[in-house]
Image (cartoon, rainbow, N blue to C red; front, side):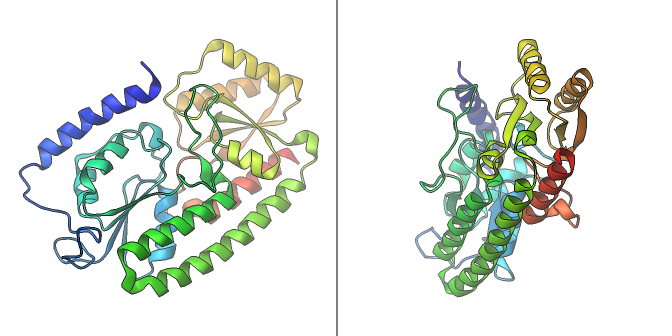
Amino acid sequence: MTYLDRYRIAGFLVLSLLLFTLSGCGEESTGASSGGAAPPGNEEGGKFTIVCTTTMIADLAKNLAGDNAEVLGIMKTGEDPHVYDVRPRDAQMIANADVVLMNGLHLESTLEHVIEHNAQGATVAKLAEDDRIKTLGSETIEGAPDPHCWFNVAYFKVYTERARDALIAADPSNAEAYQARAKAYLAELDTLDAYVTEQMGSIPQERRVIVTSHDAFQYFGKRYGVDVLAVIGISTEQQPRPQDITALEAKVASRNVKALFIETSVSRTLNDIVKKIADHSGASIGGTLYSDSLGDPGTDAGTYIGMVRQNTDLIVKALK
């Protein structure tokens, strides 16, 4: 049984439980795509509602929504989307949404099935599934795309444009406001992209190698000229094999890697393996990178732009 098959089976099991839980509620979604009979907003007549899967997408939505919509995030700080445990409230939140914004490319795993079966009246946008985004493959799962596209800032601009278009489609009366906020945010992303390019370019070429807990930074590496090595592949559900750890240690030694990085949203086991590889090779731990989740709200890493800048500054400091 393949990795994706396991997710599909798990998803339908979770979905069955959630639908059973909600079957007695007698409520219907009245999103903007429900035939135009109801205005934007949930069935209680509340504010236009945008539900987002990951913390990165929720931050993006807040930049676009302004005062025109309420943004609700399903995943919280530090939660790993690869192994996220769906909660009963998630289905109800999705059923009440006017717009659902998600990453796609199988990042949300079981949650994707819940969205498919509960967002009946909502506009749903899979932001990473766009022809302008050239997906990278998984080294461990044939045919599975790497979903971590947001680490290429140019690709996060595509996320922004797709999210903008979804909001306009669902709430055309506020199209001008969404367009204006998207234009301003896209300009901020251009500045961010230039900053990361400049900072990574200041590292001598032979030192541009990073080692992380899981393979979340290939898009970052490809965009900004960095080789990326990791303990496991693109999903944190994988279990590291002893031979893979041995091979990674050999690469660290042969390339004279100076610093390795742990991550905020992976298991302690994976981070401990990185620390052991550092000990065995004589390298240091360069710090903790944010990968599949932003930092706490109100901190420097609590926004997408702040998170990318903080990761970049940490890498540059460790490798220079």
